[in-house]
Image (cartoon, rainbow, N blue to C red):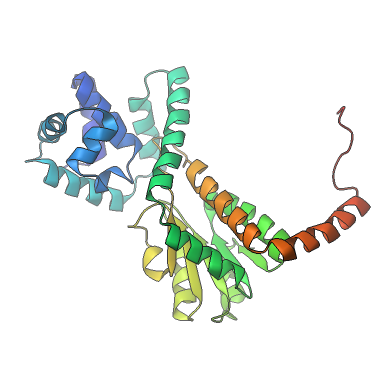
Length: 286
């Protein structure tokens, strides 16, 4: 069948109101809908299961299972930035309404992450980070923004974190990896090869790997000892890092609680240094 997402956008103008609601939900949740049952999708959209079945047949599928398989195949393909932009133009009717809908979708992403988060995995990630000799954070392209945030706070608290963002410097930075280190890989669709290769290398060296990514089909998952997922997909030319950043905030906070005594002393010493170099403004009138 032709590209599924393009088929949906092409048929949008002729859809019924209920079908249009399903279509928009599918296009706005590309990384989670492929794993939903017909009942779960119906509940998320607020329609009946029969409406979802009819939506699948309206698109030319024999039923929901075939439609779901096509969704999973389409997710593996990964949309280009141009394709994402075209979809966003089709599903958002008005600019003002689009802005409001994006805010609401970001809140949905955080709620979905909260419901699906495995606390055993989360706590295991905290354990690995707290006990690591060195922490290497691997991130490329837009995910560097998340990596920089993570590096800043882990380095302030633990003094052993380093962000590796230059693909050409990965080999020089990681060749001394051992089993006492931890590598945190951050990558979201469209996944960067250099990040996948870095976590693969770390895995082969026996180094513990924590993957922060968007779904269980991420190419980082096979190399990770612990995987934490937060959706980043949105129908736009950019990714939404609201849910991943919220996850990272929780991770930093949990590590801080675990190492509270050591961190408090370290921060007290840092405050003296910050004051010496006049880091922060104390003029509240400006």
